[in-house]
Length: 308
Length: 265
Image 1 (tube, each protein chain N blue to C red):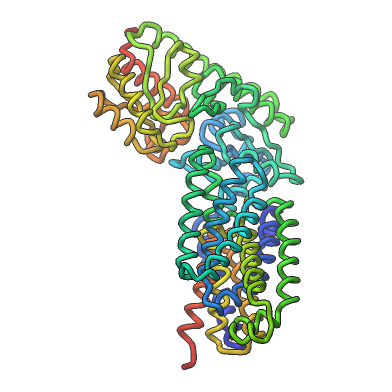
Image 2 (spheres, rainbow over the protein chains, first blue to last red):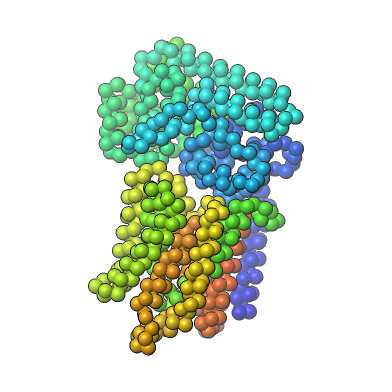
């Protein structure tokens, strides 16, 4: 009995030491230095980007889904939930976050407000194997992104009414930027010899329908869904029939599928970023939502053989 | 330092974890002594099939997991008694068979791959208040059941033949024990997950057995170790940002290694 006690004390000491070391080297949750600011958790990158743009100096935004993780299958850790609970506002897109429903239960009885930026915007359905799922990828359509930004601005302003004028002004700036992207897409995609593009994951439905394009997806709405052999054959046949020269893949998941099809039909691969996260490479290169949207446009123009 | 107790979901996870830490070694004691350690793992896989059924038909996965585990625990025991297959073969059949069923059901329902990860490795974040209540009530049920047939179970564990001769309904008791194990396993899934559950049931008991003390004392020590592993595991995993289930099991294992290494011969 005594020995067990000694061992338990030893183990406790060991664990305490490792915790202390960990806390010393990488403190987590919101930095306390910026007290007085609104603490916002955003489920993944574009929402965090909008919140940062709108909130500016008055907010402290943390992205829950880490860089280079897929928001469709990221599970928040205990610390993530603690971060959310210690903040004022949680911004979700809706239908992307597998933990989106559960988090409402978890946050019951706390003063964290949950705002679903995509609520009411998710109008498109995608039918996979006879099951229809709601497509959540609204942030890839600048028009819908503006509406998400508006919802976020309303939520931030409601939490911090003292700076409403500032937030409105910032929203105005963001809307102008998004408008400019929208115009660029309209003009850039106006004269193209093709209208169908093949992507690895069906993330571009709202973008495609807005600019009169057709999206053919190898996998479904979730980027890691494995397509069956039949689906791969169908997509290859489509690519051959339409003389598709580029197959898109995305940055956060393996390009394996896109490469398989590209080899099959003799096409090349190109990145079409669903902007679900900012990889460390992106951030060092100084990329953000707006520049990635423009990169996407550039690659679309290339793949669809558009002439200005 | 202890800011984590402000978070309601961690408190819920701890509550559920402690209840499981109390009942797991109690069941584990009898399973280990009867060389039945692997049944916990088998039942955990069966529970996964139960979880898949629950997710497919949108019923509370805890209930379907319990139902699947309890029903197959009886089936496993019958298969074992029938003597037409070896005991461990019965376990292997159910272990891989239910995993196969689970994975097929999951591909039929395609779209809860994410939830699956929670069930495989556990996540205290997913414990709802209603889960704590259910775990609490069923935990008490397991405790009461064990207490009421405690003497018979001990007898059975050490000498099944003479227990039978002395008129103890061994078949009924065996089935009861396995059914209780099934219940415990399904309850523990949200915390430590399917793949790690048997560790929580078996390791503290095996560690306590190393000390070679009396039956009751062994149970008490196993209880202490298991509760310690769960609490320290949840706290540590919070600060280290690691999986709670994995951390709990590693701590239990660390204690086992130390006890084993420092054992007086």
